[in-house]
Length: 83
Image (cartoon, rainbow, N blue to C red; front, side, top):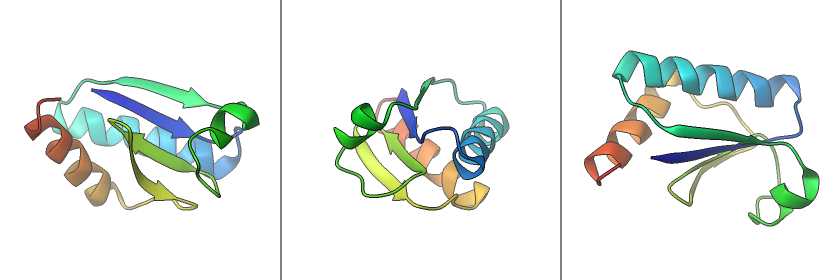
């Protein structure tokens, strides 16, 4: 499973990455997580805010840190699709 956290390293961006890692541990789901910090690289994803979360190429959220329950739901959905 490929996951990208987009954000330049702000507090919210780092919080999203931390919450994501904790959700992965709680659901026992392994994934390749990349924190994309370069503004030009972030722009290539077409998001208009940070933090942003991308799972398997699909933008899941932009501009907020979702509740851990929602992160777990997205992880389980991706796993069930073959991740």
